[in-house]
Image (cartoon, rainbow, N blue to C red; front, side, top):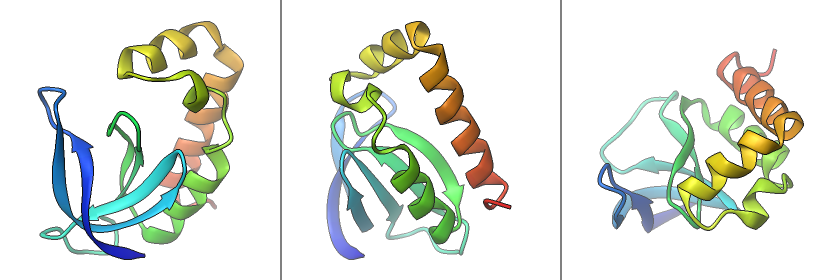
Length: 110
C-alpha cells in the first residue's frame, strides 16, 4: 500500500488528484481518501477513467474484488465511462460476473 496522490474522476467527469492510500491491481486500484478512516472505507477504481467500481468495502474485500475482476475484457476496451457501459450492454455474461463479484465483496466474500 502506498500513500500519496492518485487521479480520480470528479462528479463533473474531470480527472483530479486526490490524496490518500492506494494499491494498483492494473487496470484497477484499491484506494481510500486521506481524510476518510474506518475499516469499511476502501474503493475499487478503474485507473484509466478514475471511476469507482465499488466503494465502502473492507480492505481485504476490496483487494479480492480487484484481483478477481482485473482480468475482464471490459478494462481492455474501455477508454471512457461510456465505453464501459456500451461494452457491458452487449457482453451480458461478463456484466453478470462483475455484478456477482461486486455483490460478494459487499457481503464480505462469505
